[in-house]
Length: 165
Image (cartoon, rainbow, N blue to C red; front, side, top):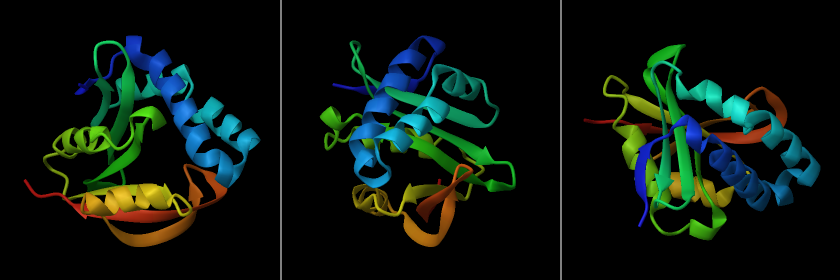
């Protein structure tokens, strides 16, 4: 049984490993092994993750069973749109997908921003499974872009959910 808790510095190596394995399983067929390796080295290194731990107006959570981490999520208020929370990351290791862990991680994150009116996420346009997941959580498509986290050539679908407390 996994429970959701706030991430700590001691979790970062396991989170980095989880992200690398999940990204390769999900995105190798879309972007290729070399590009995924480059992205994970940049975005999912322990140093990159560490910078998120103390970020103001954010929440970094993990799904933990006491022995291993099966998922993680990170969201923060958008500095350009204070009533919008951006879901930057929500990943569940492929061995643990379909068990409700992603839903539980999201349920925690959506309660962390009581002043936000909406949550937004960008998903690779070719990741139909993720788009379906977010749609089931109540997100709807609001746009598209060709740039994801500063990387051109990564077509994404922009999804948004109204937050109501």
